[in-house]
Image (cartoon, rainbow, N blue to C red):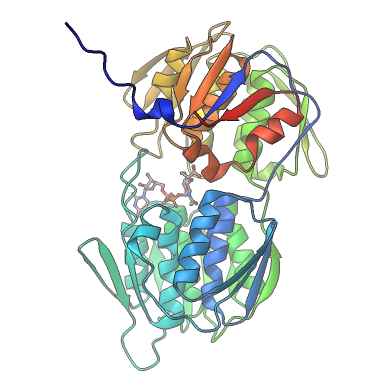
Length: 432
Ligand code: EPZ
């Protein structure tokens, strides 16, 4: 006699119940960029004066970063989407493992802690479901700026030798245009003695946003947004007020929500240049885009297959690979999707297959044969962007889907179900 396998714990987790087949209309509002706000918050460590950030999205990752900064002695005040950070007297240079472990971006703070205090001890962030995600380039950059860095027992300890405790300007050529390494080195070099140059730097809009903030705090940075960034070190930085850029990945996800439900919709605010590769693929697969001052109105036509390869910016962003695959699973024809950034970012494929998608995987390439209908099913979002792909598929699948993995979704999408419901989607969060 076989005993039934106990239900997986997931079944008991909160989920989104999504009734598929409802068109969307109106406007989807885009919040501030998670991947910018997180690193901009760590820039507060570089000055004793108050830094006020506006347009900070209400996300669990932001809560996590707030706890880390508070553990270092930063005074924090939050009112809706504004956060005031004051690092007048830091009490620690060692963020606790239990806080860092859950939030990879917190490792990037090692650059600002070291520059401000001449010493930092930060646990390694470790890998995650989508890849090993080493921090070799971050450490190599800090060493080039003169820090003595050791990695022991999963902890990175960095110290600046000498009286002045100031890092020294240097030239660094990155082996890969890592976003986090560029941001870490950029923050460390702002207070270094002399000139630093980062070659093969990441060109993402979030890197540009960080450089713009640091320049507003008195730094001397040129070239951000391009492959070569030059930083002339200064003695001190001052406080300022700054507004975080809109979230291009959330905006892209919303444009895909319109495309997959074949709905005409406006998405705003968006900076079109932050999404150029994505907008091109949307046009190629049959969408008409009207771009105005503040936003984009999308009118999907018949959706046809397109090929996508993820690349560092300005190439196609890996963070929209899964949401775009959900759309192409419903397209007319074949699409070949190649993931070039992470070694393990195809876990959404099995969940889309549960909904009737026709997808074959070969290594880091997925061959997607579009189907005319997806069917609703209980599915699990295995990481942040995979969870978003499940929500998009649920919006169009026949029947009612149960999407789990909301702990991932809430890390990067502020109030997504309320926003979608306001545009006509039928979904609700159920606690079990
Ligand atoms: C940032 O991660 C984003 N996270 C990621 O978004 C995004 O996927 C990624 O950039 C790429 O665009 C934040 O900004 C908080 P990388 P980051 O260092 O900085 C390899 C999301 O969904 N690499 O540019 O960690 C690495 O393994 C998240 O919001 C090395 O090999 O990314 C990866 O394959 C997920 N050695 C590639 O480079 C290194 O020393 C890109 O990583 C550093 C990185």
